Amino acid sequence: MKAIEPVINLLCKDNMSWFETSSLLAGGERRSFIKFNQKAYDKYVNKDYYKKFHLEDNMTEFVKIKDLIGGRIQSLSQSILTFVLVALLFTVICRIILYNLITYIGKFI
Image (cartoon, rainbow, N blue to C red):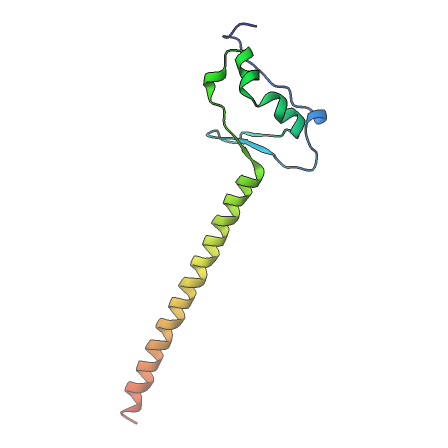
């Protein structure tokens, strides 16, 4: 195989896990989910495999799904925490306004 020819890894039901939505994410690309089981990952995602096709300088980066989900859960937690803090701030401001209104109107009654 010449280095100028494309390299394609064939993914089929035999080398994928059916219960995963996606086990790896090709970083930097849109919609680049690739599913590998551990055996296929060990076979195809290593520098020796890329060296055979003179592709070791491509710097392919894979992210495991647990890291991807961990980042999404952290983002969701930050969103919920921000919402709760804004709601608490709003409640405190409303209480201060109500207290001042009651105190101010109470002086005239």
